[in-house]
Length: 451
Image (cartoon, rainbow, N blue to C red; front, side):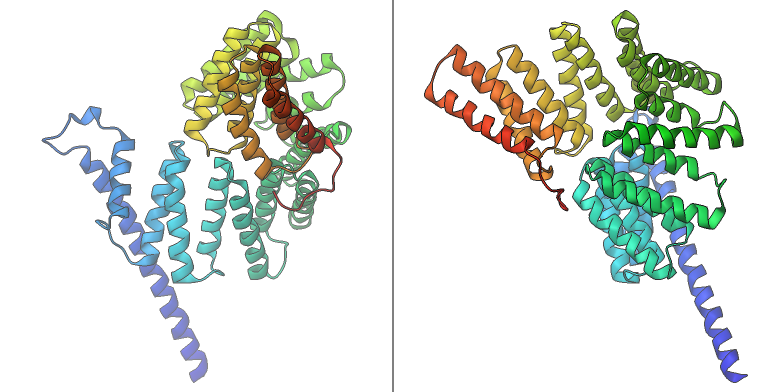
């Protein structure tokens, strides 16, 4: 009896301590928000209307970094996470990252690696790195977080672990590790089916993601199969106008062989979004872009412009960069080279401002702008862009990667063109060098386990 009473008291003490810590974290977060808001009302400064939330948040961030706001470690980590999340909501991931990183450092020291708060912070920082294009750092954290969750749960059959498998698979796809990504998605499907049955609402999401992996690896028939399975599940459970249907339809349009079916699927996706969300919603950007690529011509041009404008209004700068870069490709194919170059410059500028220096989009647009400039005989600027892109790609991509091959092919074209305009042994040798590197790039090779 005495031992049981002691255990009960110990549990009660731990619960009270947990409640006190939770209250301290909440109080600190509330005070931070109150202070940020009161800052905007201070007199003797600029008018309230001219002070942006970003400026207020920057002030709070600086006070944390300089020690003007000091908390015990667990509370400090909680506040750092709050600030990081606010920066993330503003699309300022590069400013969010230091706060997530500091929160992880604090929680590791205060709570240890095998604590749920620490694991969740690892996952958050990993997703931040992923979205910044820092894929190796993201993989290290997300793999470690997943292993720790499995160790703590004692089994992989846990809903949070299924989410972790899905998130890690998304990252592996970004790393061009399609086989690993597919295995993780299949494992996530097994967990969801085992835990929740064959009609679980998460299954279409994972099936859709698996379909995208099959598409990326060139397995279009398998992609079409799993995407149709996902659509059937959604249609039977939620009907035609389910929120997930447009993305499934758009991806299925990529997978089918018949261009007419692809166009019908994409137009169906647009019609569902317009029915659900109206004709000005940024979700229309992706299917509009897809349809533009399918049909080209005047309507295609209008659809690209519509997609870009929708994303501009929504403040989705990184997505504007993606669509703008793709629009530049359409303009180039139409022979509108000056417009194509201007669009590609804007796409690259946005990517450089919003993403990590070696993010996939940044390197892709740098390579494509360099290739455009070779065609315009702007060889010096093209050389700087292409050498920088090739160097970054060579350090992060496996042999045979399409982006690395494109950069090296453009360098061959650059030095061949320079040699044609101004014959020299140096230009000829440079062209031969990059030709040999391009050949090495396109040789079959065993899959690499590292990037």
